[in-house]
Length: 225
Image (cartoon, rainbow, N blue to C red; front, side, top):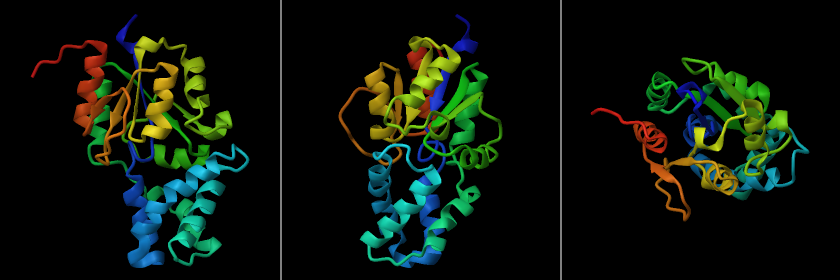
């Protein structure tokens, strides 16, 4: 099978886009010195809401999670404050190493996809911030389900008809991306942006350059140094 049929898929927010840093910057005018505490609490609140299933749009999940996280940390936010996050979505930017990483992967002939829990319109805003469009993206809105449930992975597999051996998934969140990929038998690279150390089986990368090397290693591509 040709190199062009080899796919590398990514989680978006937290893996390609600086989610924690961007969220903290957006919260700073409203939460002040407590912004980092709200960011810390946000992930757990978001996860709890996502576990209820696709009964809410992701925008509704984000707004509700932000209000809940702020309340847990003693920060008073209004509904209008919470909606600032989705209204300011374009402020979320890719990590500094991302464009170089994606360009290197494309130069090797890999096709690039994104599997994201975001709504279509939010991801489209983010998509425009990248230098080159992705070959394919699948959103939670399209499949009506959130990672870590398998629906985004299965939808991508159906759309591309990719063989497992020609697909690598990259994520920074073990729970939402690496664990479900492992459960499905999808080869995976864990982009460890937070220095965490969960148990499990995945190639580990600390930077975008490491991701490129790990993908090449998986596909058995010899790279001259």
